[in-house]
Image (cartoon, rainbow, N blue to C red; front, side):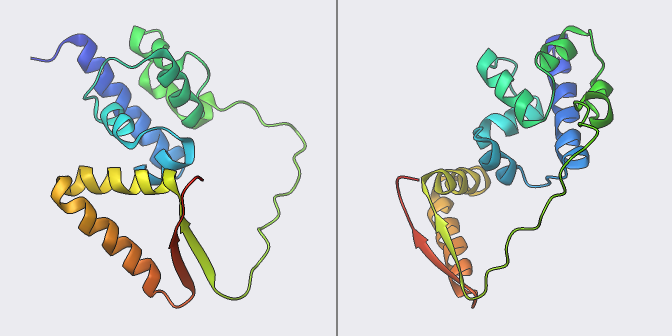
Amino acid sequence: MASSTEHRWTRLGAALRDRRIRDLGIDRLTEFSREHGIGYRILTDLEAGRRVNFASRTKAAVERAYDLPEGALDRVLSGEWAESTLRAEKTLQEAPAETLPVEPPPRRDGPHTFRLGDAEARALVTAAYDLAGPEGKEALVGLALRLLGERGDMTVSRTSGD
């Protein structure tokens, strides 16, 4: 039977997953992991409630990634805050009254190049390993690179040192 601590972590993980998907609009955990520099495995364990022992610096990084105030995870775990407190409308810092308009990125004509750097390669291999185990990771990485390379408007190259 799960302890109350494990139960709190499970509820917290579900709330974080909901926040990522509903409030932050990011369905793919691999994308979220790569964007925020937090290991995919850490995030899957956190959102699934499989672990209850995260370092304080990891919790701080998670709070930044999920756009939560400092100490939010510990407040939920201690019972000071309910999981519903993690909803965007309750935790996002107020935006300034005047904001600059967001301009779309400049349009580039011609073929686009996808460069798979070290960080992206690690995230891709981690996701492949989690999905298919060690024997399937090379096949999945190769498939991903081939699919990207087959697109007419994109070339693929592997880089290092990114």
